[in-house]
Length: 161
Image (cartoon, rainbow, N blue to C red; front, side):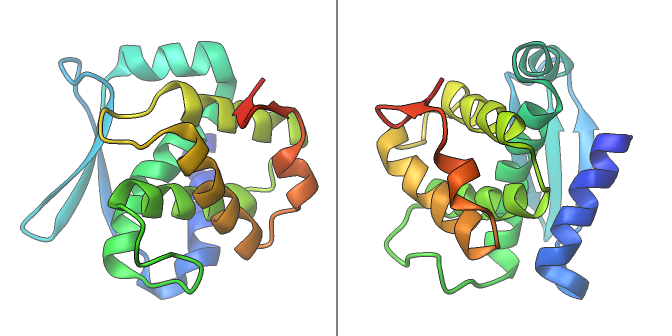
């Protein structure tokens, strides 16, 4: 519950009164996590074993990053942002929104590295390569007030440690 509250506070600083409403559903048969939009209603569906594995490897920051990416899809559908390139795919746009949410979450440098590592480790099949994703995440992060030195520390060859 504490993680959901932290995420809601971060999201509210981004979208104020225009935040998309997203329902959260556990589904043990889901392969991982996904945002499903049907008839204007957004649902974030996740597999508890998937979130347990993410948490075991990356803690709260990993879960927060993956949910921020999924919420990024909903934000992309309902909000606009100057830092989002019109040439980016939906996955890159969601990554940029996730970067913004991570910036507004005030993560410590070590938690930021865990968040980036989770995003790098668990891409969907439709995600482009990490070397394309990382600049989109950085763009959202820095445009939403994130300290670029926290973002870039601890990366080698574009991938988090």
